[in-house]
Length: 96
Image (tube, rainbow, N blue to C red):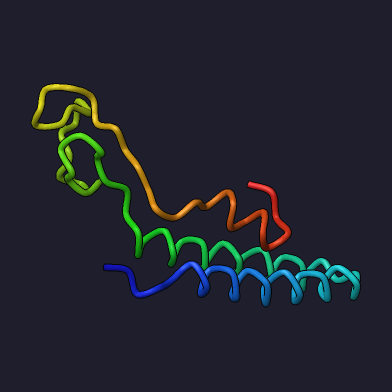
């Protein structure tokens, strides 16, 4: 179960987008860099909370997944995720 909801993602993205807009308006390369890094850190945090899982065998993506990329059903894993990193970055005003 996730610690975060869709509303959490949206609220954080809105706050980060507003702060990024401020950094751009300040015309500060340092501020823009800090905001890009902060946005990336939140994206990593949310992605780690919602790891990818195989839609076929329902195992979570981890270091224990078979190196060949096949699930226990003998077919390639069909990785899925409930967190869309690209959509989050776009909502924050960044492109992936």
